[in-house]
Image (tube, rainbow, N blue to C red; front, top):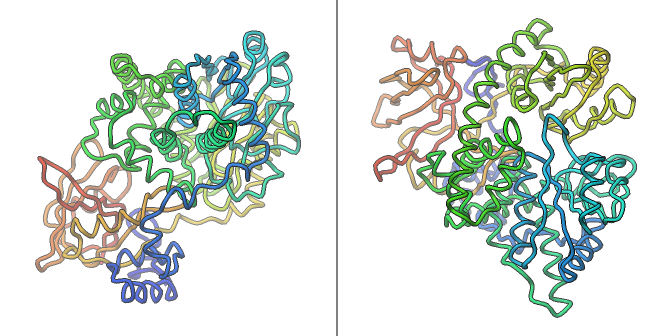
Length: 580
């Protein structure tokens, strides 16, 4: 049965509340632990037993960080890395051009510089070289270096790594592995096919961090100083984890939580400059990492110079950091304009094919490769289907895909590559990249749609809106939100608490900006609450609430603390509504 009887909301979704068993568990937890009922509801939804509730609210990294040696090739990789440091050898870092790659590279750059070495950074150009190691670059690096460390890439790069004659290659990655591994000295990847998958939620920066933990252990065992303070580097791990949409479970939860504390100290020049140009005026949280900082770091790799993000994150010079941050902010503005043009064209094309197909896809001439992944996310959200967007140039197309929960897109893309329908392709369950010959575009997408349908993508309805329970405005206060934050951090695999406010009056509604709606709400008694609905006029939500005519509504969204002029107040980030 739909929660509050909402079978179809103003955004076309059915509301789903907690089941009876979860509701009972939350009630019992609240009574036994003394936690506020909304907090208990969140913990019960996450499956946290009541006896573990307090421990869950105060996660300790030392308790959750896995032994690095659980990952295959980890000891070998760390041993070779230590040997290169001791021997003052020439080290190159080959990184992907996204936030995870940039953060992973920055971790190694900072660590090695503090050890007195000057490594080479190499990040391929998205358009000219594409994703991952390529043969010319690897040959050139191998001619001038003793060790090449590939981060956030390399697991499927057999020929390029084979071309690195004369240098050892270490791969630190998290993308889905194939049946065979490239001829590297070590491939550390929790998503290798011979791993158990227990640590498959780690992003590349998490894998790099674990290797540095193992390096620290080996240095100590060898009677040396353990090297730089790794805890001070967790801000980079947190940024990568959130921006790469890695699940905030297990060790990731503790890594991000501690990383946010480190970031709040404003010790890293690059992140300080980036936060300032993004006009962050509050302590960092996962929203800031995912929607303010991450896109700006990504902008260099998307439409600018590929290494800008990594250089910003690794610099110790505040002046250089300011210049790089301003350039990335400018590129991010340009990226948004390019993205909007591609989004409009891709949506029109996808709608013509049908948004109810097992695969939603679009391809266009000259669409910028740097924005196709973002546009694929927009199509996925609109259709609740796996989506692929491809930019065509000459005889080839380069594309990116995004998936929905329960549909493994990365494995399907990898299968297409092995079947010869793609020039190359790979990724993980929720995101993948591909290169396809123009004359193979239609058969490749037809085959991918077939694989998506086999996984059940063709029968998915509109996305349900999952709610943690009911909440009245009078109970929505700053202390409650602070308690809810203790159950975080929130993100992929750990959605932020979402509550329904039943039978609300709209006292005030005003359009702000291009598509947002600001509201003042009341329960008809003493409970009042301010709300903001971002992008409300992109759906029926904005027009209906703006012209409410005195009607009452069930409202759904997430609570947040709004800081203005040094004062804190509660605000509802409104996501959906239905007439009461």
